[in-house]
Figure 1 (cartoon, rainbow, N blue to C red):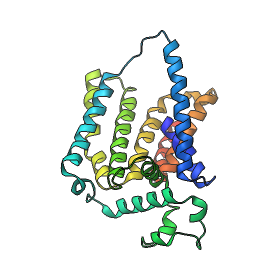
Figure 2 (cartoon, rainbow, N blue to C red):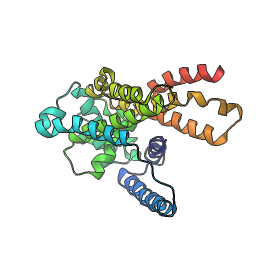
Figure 3 (tube, rainbow, N blue to C red):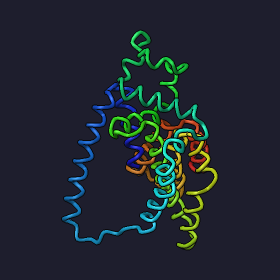
Length: 263
């Protein structure tokens, strides 16, 4: 849910309010520090025992090692020339463009930076599922890393989010704890998720965590009957995040949710 809120607000800050990436990063940093201070205050006052999900910690460490270790060993040859360098270069070009210029400049053809026009039709690509590229722009702005390593690390982070979301999904299924662990590990290292990772379908990969959470919420649709305002806002923001990051998967989600809703 927090990821969806971040996507929606970031989208409007950059593409509608046309605030540059550097200022948006500062806004989110201030918000993060404020939130951290608030939660630390609550944590210190709370007398309840903090529960730590050991399996999720194990999953995060396992995914990080399996994906990052080969990149560390083999270097650029591993994370640059992968299954679909055309899409990778598209995301990187847009990410670099968004990092260097605010959107008000990019929408005026006479002011569009000439140094980026070597990428064919980039003036049109800024309107085509641009939010994933904006995430890359954020990372370029924050971290002083090899520009080709940045989208790779973003994809690893999205695999982590997808795995956690899948764990939330199967928690609604009445199977044993061991079965849930096996299913989560199977999904995490399944063909489909790795295939999306390899072909540089970053928008698709960025949408999977939200899609899985939306599907996991289908058993709570009775809250719409009682007009639970908080739940409707929560569910609406999830769908907004999915739509903005990857409209095609949102259409699939819309069909599934529509069937449940009218049912």
